[in-house]
Amino acid sequence: MNKATKNDKKMRQFCSVPNVLNLIYPPVCGICGKLCNEFLCKKCSIMLRKQARCMVDNYGNDDKNFDEHLYIFKYEGIIRKIILKYKFQNKSYLYKTFVNFLLKDENLFEILEKYDTIIPVPISRKRQKQRGYNQSELLAREIAEHTNLKYENLCLFKTKDIIEQSKLNKEERIQNIQGAYELKNPQRLTHKKILLLDDIYTTGSTVDECCRILREAEPRKLGVLTIAKD
Image (cartoon, rainbow, N blue to C red; front, side, top):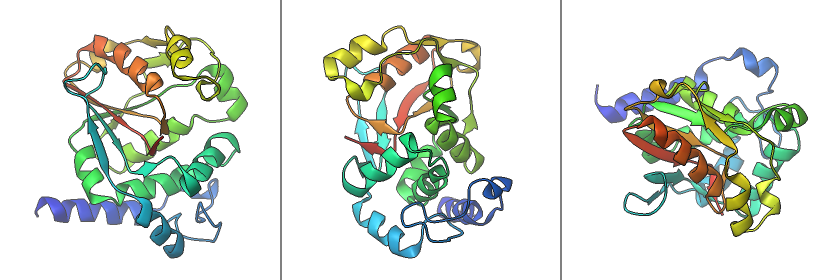
């Protein structure tokens, strides 16, 4: 079985495997709300696919603490509206829509397979209690469920509550995020190819600070995956 066939098989399995969470998160299109087993109806899928393109920004020789950034949307229009609903309007079930779409992009899927560990950007206990869920954690768990990546949540922690980054400018974000994260159990990440997942990339200050902390574990590779980039 060649690589393309294996990828096609995994993506078909992703769309067909029943999940007990469907009882909690209804199988509806995350955009128009129409009942849909794949969490994205054909009409909305076509609309998003016109905007989607697997993009890779390389930072190997830059001053970033990560090697590359993967994303498929620009943070604008309908994508911005959907992400804001997912993040701030208690639409947690939308993680199914995002992951379904991400894993159907063959180019992105192949890049993901080159990593072996996926870690969500953590949020503080206070923010988790207010929101009821960590939007990045839901995405990372689901991606790990349907790829070869191992989900890891025992290493990177947010140790203090800070002002929401979206309320600050670039310079303020850099200062605000410093000292907010802590690394535990670094041996679990040593020599691993790590993919850090967040929902949006705006200035990059959050993911860069997280990756700076993760670098202490001496991973082989460190990349960032987001749904969209501003």
